Structure formats: structure tokens, C-alpha cells
Amino acid sequence: MAKLTKLDDIVSLCKRRGFIFQSSEVYGGLASCYDYGPLGVELKNNVKKAWWKAAVQMRDDIVGLDSSILMHPLIWKASGHADKFADLVAECKKCNTRTRVDHLVDNAEEHTEHVPIETAMADAQDLSKKVCPSCGKIGQFTEPMPFKLMFETQMGANVDDAMTLYLRPETAQGIFVNFKNVLDTTRVKIPFGIAQIGKSFRNEVTTKAFIFRTREFEQAEIEFFCEPGTDEQWYEHWKEVRFKWYTDLGIKKENLRFRDHDPDELAHYAKACVDVEYKFPFGSGDWQELEGIANRTDYDLRQHQRGIRTLNDWFETKGDLTKITLKEEAENFEKGPLSYFDEQNKKRYIPYVIEPSAGIDRSTLAFLVDAYDEEEVKGDTRNLLRFHHALAPIKAAIFPLVKKDGMPEIARKIYDELKGCFNCFYDQKGAVGRRYRRQDEAGTPFCITVDGQTLDDNTVTVRDRDSMEQIRISTDNLKSHLREKLDM
Ligand code: ATP
Image (cartoon, rainbow, N blue to C red):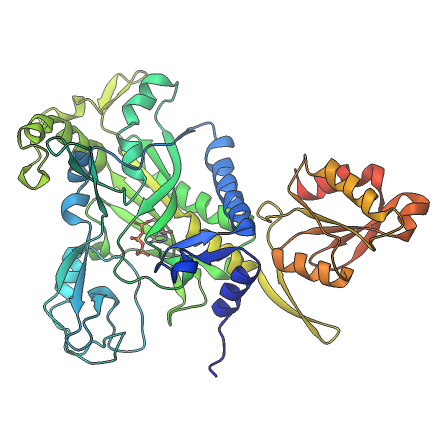
């Protein structure tokens, strides 16, 4: 049997312990969609909380937003997604499997980026040496064709006014179209950012590696608006801030790196782009994108100004996006509805935008992979997740050593007192050693045990997940001790 990889071990732990399940599993499963179980939803919520805290709560220059998934279709025309958000695919003539052209390899190397369609076209000229990843045939491909990544859906009950909408493929556009609302209703001044976490959808051609690339996923994006000319400085700022976010939450530095995009790899809107990459345990190249940080210039706000000018045509063509050509801007586009007036310097301009765009599911996977450890303890293998305290789904587990002598009652009382402060778990089933191991696998930093001595001197043991060391603490000091340790 082939040796299981670290990813196989993690997938199996995630299923066994209720972190992540295949979507619709009892119906045989739905490819590349996943459900987060009781531990997984806590972990993922903690990842989102940690992101929101760093992006919004701790900064004076960023405000939050929660925009809708369904938006006016013209937004996707203006942003370029309706025409350009596609992957170039080729179909294997032998097995009919479609593969992204930029994922086809003629050696052991593997690529995973969404390459802009123009670049992929240029690369696609020669598929004669490329291998079908499904059946292994070489050079047996159809002509490459664009495959649109946005999911379509219909809105409206009446045939006459029903229209085709898209499930958003990124959360960013919801921010751009609310730029003016936020400016008009808050005290923000440039430079400032708008942050949002939410679901995005892409009909990915190739999905792979568990929750790394799925068709429904969550993004955490900041659009940071700044004066043109200061954009390069802010780009550097965000590179540093975002890299540090991962290492502050426990990701090992040696597993994280930057990769600058080559000029011909840049998306149509970007002046510069860098990926924060993590050394994932799959794919031959290992290093895979965790987050993208892009200098989007004034592209999006300018495009939406053009979109707004085109609105009447859209109504006249009954919402047929294929018939819409965006109206050219008036000469003084800097004075358009999405421009910004700098009161202090009395000038008006369209802001530039730096976008750090992270994936919540992808970072959750990175946190899982990085925290996963196996240790030999007294001839036994101990599996554990060394999560940063802020990310651990359960912060403390409370056990009575045995189910008698009043121990369960005391343990319950402790549990009831602590659960108001942080997420706790009560367990009285089975040998205490096994209960410790279960919590190690869940990544619980502390286990508290009520034992015989508790009945005499009111102390309990507190066991540390990482060192397995136990100390005795008076129950009176337990809450403050844990709060200090957990920084909560
Ligand atoms: P990739 O090249 O891996 O397909 P991308 O460059 O198209 O990704 P972006 O459009 O930059 O990705 O999206 C920003 C972030 O959103 C990514 O860094 C990733 O964390 C997350 N993301 C994008 N697509 C997916 C997906 N299909 N599944 C899970 N996360 C995703």
C-alpha cells in the first residue's frame, strides 16, 4: 500500500474528530464542497475572528462591511469578470477530462495559479508534450477553449422581469460598489480600508487537495484606498502586515514565503501582485498560494464609473450583458461619482487600491497542517494539533477523574463557571488518559482534572497540551489562571 501522506493523515483526523466532512456525504458526496463539523466550525470561526480583529478592530483606518452575494449583473461587466473570468481548458480526446491548460504538465512539475487568459493562450500553442492528469495520454488534446468560472442563477418569478445573476466569484466588488456609501456615512479619510469576510463561488475546473480549492469558499478581503503615488508604499506595508498575521498565529516562518507575479502573469487590473505561499503537503511543488496581495490601481472604481454611465443601455437591452459596451468616461473622469475629494489639499482623484485577499478555508487548512504533529510517548503515537490558543476550537476540557465521590459534581460546577468565558468541554467517559488524547487531537490547550486531592484541598490539575506537564491550581484561581494563559 502506498505510504499515506501528511495530508491523508490530516483528512482522516478531520473526519474522525468532526472538523470537516464531505458535503452531502450520505448521498454519496458532492465534489469539492465541504461541511465544517462541530470542531471545524469553531476553528474556522476563530480564524475569521483573528482576521477581523487584526484587520478591523485593531486598526483605526479600516471599517467593516457585509455585502450581498447577489449583485447587479452590470457590476460583473464593469469589473471585467463577465468577459474575462475564465480558465483556458483543453479536453483529453481519450477520456474526455477537461484540464486547465496552465495545470497541464509535461514533466513532474505542477502549477496551480489562475493564469490570465491571455498568458494561458500564449502557453497553449503547444500541447503535444502535455500529459492528461486523468488517463496519462500524451498530447491528445482538443483546441483550448475558455471555460467561464462564474456560477449563473436566475432572479425573479415572472418570465418578463427575470434576470440572470451571478454568484459572486470574489467579495471585493461588493466593497467597491459601497465605497461611496461608506465615505458618505462614516468619518473615514484616505488612506483607509474596507474589510469584508464572505462566501465566494467559482466553478473551478480542477479541484484538488481537500479544502484547498473548492467551488464554494470564504474569502477575507481588504480594499485599502490610497492616494495615487502612495500605492507602492502601502503595497509594502500590506505585505509585511499580512505575512506577520500568519506567523503571529503560529505558522512556522520556514513554511511561508512571498512569490512575486511575473509581469505577464498579472491579472488585467493589477500593477503588481505577490502571493503569500505556504508549503502545503501536496502537489510536487509544495508551495501554493495562501493569499494574494495586489495593487489594483484605480481600475475598479474607474470601471464602475463607466458601468454607472452605461446603466440606461443595460435597461434598454433588457439586461443582456452581451450587448453592453461600457461607455467611455468623460474627460474629467477624476471628478466622477466614485472620486474622492481631499479637503486638506483641495484636490479630487480616483483612489488607488491595495488588496490583501485571503482565503478563510485555505488558511484554515494551513493552520491545521502547521499545527499537526505526531509524537512517540511511551511506545505510543500521540497525534496532536498544536493550535495557537486563539484558534483552538475548545480552550479547556474539564474531567472528573472517576464518576464517583462527588467528582462529577465539582467538575460540572467548574465547567459551568468557565463556559461563560470561553469554549469549554465536559467529559467523564472512559479512562482519563484516553480523554487527554482526544483533546490533544482536538487541539485543546488545557485539560482540568478533578481528582481525590480536590476533595481535600480544593485544587485541580491543569495539563498543558504541548508539554503534557501538569500543575495543581486552587479552583479559586483557576479562571484567572486560564484567562491569563489564553489571553482572553
Ligand atoms: P488560485 O490561483 O489558487 O486559483 P487565485 O489566484 O485565483 O487562486 P484569488 O482570486 O487571488 O485566487 O483569490 C484570493 C484568495 O482566495 C486565494 O489566495 C485563496 O486563498 C482564496 N481562493 C481563491 N479561489 C479559491 C478556491 N477555489 N477555493 C478556496 N479558496 C480560494
